[in-house]
Amino acid sequence: TWSMAAFAEETIAEIRERVGEKRVILGLSGGVDSSVAALLIHHAIGRQLTCIFVDNGLLRKDEAKKLKAVFAEKLQLNIRFVNAAGRFLKALAGVADPEKKRKIIGKIFMDVFEAEAKKIKGADFLAQGTLYPDVIESQSAFGGPTSIIKSHHNVGGLPAKMKLSLIEPLRFLFKDEVRLLGKTLGLDDDMVHRQPFPGPGLAIRIIGKVDRRQLTLLREVDAILLEEIRKAGYYRKLWQSFAVLLPLKSVGIMGDKRTYENIAAIRAVTSVDAMTADWARLPHDLMGRISNRIINEVKGVNRVVYDISSKPPSTIEWE
Ligand code: XMP
Image 1 (tube, protein in one colour):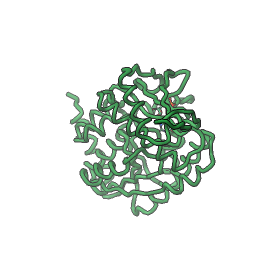
Image 2: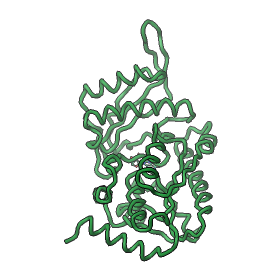
Image 3: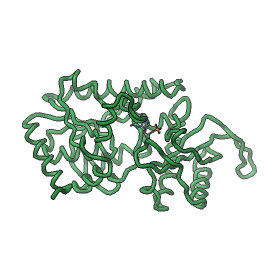
Image 4: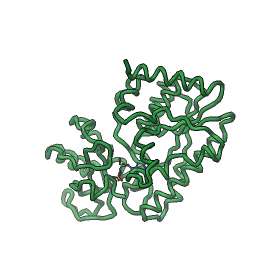
């Protein structure tokens, strides 16, 4: 009988056989797919796998730190951390157009990744956490909305350019199966059940121009939101929950002083595959707590609004 444990065992044996004494590189983002792929390959070939983690400066609060603790320290994966925040932020300076922001981020990611990959001598393989829906999507002429990302984040140009062969151990699995596989391989529940996070990161959740100050602000807002969502037991019920920083200011009152500060929008959606999504009917008292905490604790935000748009015709992300 087919089980995830048997699938894992078979796949591990196949990878071992195919790779032999060679080396494999993999772009680790900390998302479910790349994490499970990394762990599976690590089980097969241990330190012959080198993961590359690119910190683009657009991540959520403590993200890089958490990833280090889990994958490098606890699971003992071989990871190269590249801090490229400066490069990304410099290139993004003054750019307000969403598509331009995405293109810049995608291009720098490729450059940084390729430069790092070249330093790994004897690497013959590039591994990716491609899922079955990604495979289908890339075969159809008209890809779904998430196919936009693939042009940024998949390192598809690299294998040919660097003469690498692809290893895609998850290419026959759906998301829920990947989560189950992660669990089978002993991945922390926290990692297994992560909500998706877009490659361009917080840059597409700061509407318009992106700078360090706004990134810090959004990180604080987002951390509070996620903490309250988790505490209320909603994290796993939602496809995604996040905050968006608007390039708008509004008037408020704090104590006896007039304030004129930013607006944060909260987006929480349910979905099965991100092709369609509905705005989540969060309890009003939870929304109230989220709003109170953000306004009281984050200096620079004096108003919180809730996004009640479904996809389609809106998208999940605002940019
Ligand atoms: P939209 O906003 O198109 O998003 O409804 C659908 C899903 O895709 C995610 N998303 C991205 N993921 N790189 C990614 O890795 C991207 O450029 C990107 N853009 C959107 C989004 O978070 C949602 O889950």
